[in-house]
Length: 463
Image (cartoon, rainbow, N blue to C red; front, top):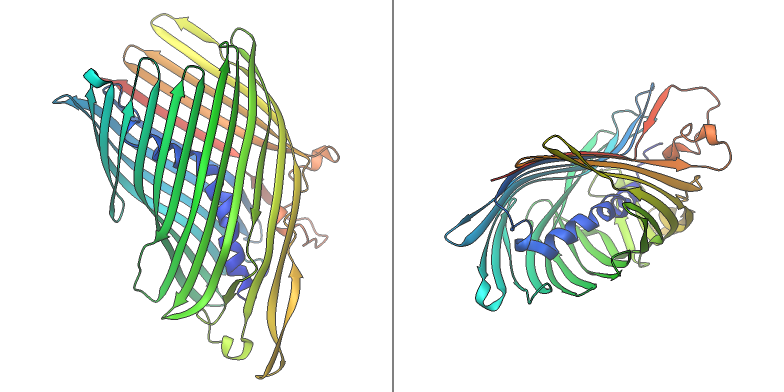
């Protein structure tokens, strides 16, 4: 992989980051916003948890490194004082994409999200009218918050929650001796509505993104909006159908010292899944369904190289991203076994899960690079195509989720692994680097490729 003095590498890594990292976190983001102040407020407890995901990692004997990982550490507690349930947590988030250059090892690109979040909420229960009212404050580098209410007639409930969240991402690069940090910071205002009535549960969330004003060298104003919905229906406690839909659009005006050097013209992604689960024998479940992700972008996205190197005096480089369309469809079938055992004073619960998803992958990604016909008067554009299609036919997913309950203690251990699968050349599944699939030198290079692994541990104590 070679870094050239052209802006296309910057915009492609930024746009590629969104579906790669944001989509796996979508459920966590919307879950936290949707439940907000009412999450984990039924018991007095203390808990500590750590979650690590190695989505992809590659290194070889020449010094090339590429990795995508996520780490999420939470310390949480809840207690009741003066008839108000208080909940607080500290959350450390560390997500990162990194890769360096084969031609010049010191050259690298790194996109990361590092947060230290402090959260405090209070919920007041009013039993006479079946109502809970709550509010919360959250601190990262700025103070944000949320407010909501939950109405609970009999065994049903209606919930509304509104929350303001702070999002901070950082792009750092070193290319041919030029090093810079670019920040992408914005607020997200979410409004969520949820209702559960008998066997039906419905959730709706709308999110509006708007920029955090920065007054440094770079002002990257990110805006956008999105929504999610979830519908769940249970049939006689033996089968359940679920449909989830998430859509988000991101726009960006990228300025350097008051002059525009780039634009993100409506990068959009949509994620959906439909599942039906059947308990065909006690504690054993069969699930079939379909997952999908679709991305596209407007034609006016571009980025210039001039803020990053004085060579633009001669290059006049501009890259226009004309199409970024990716369509991933994953029909799937899964089996889970959820036994429960008693061992002396301990209760052991397990969830053994295996899933196969067949991969249907389509993509069309076009960009144009500006060049001189007659310097410095006449310029034109060369059209180029970027192929990011997968060489695999499907994915296996294996999960073991075990909990041990002893008195007031609970320990939860979680491990999962994605395994890419190819019908032909099965023994060659991990033998090629998908980021450098076109770079075959003919020589054998010692390399290590891993990924698709998630590990988590949680220790819970009920007060």
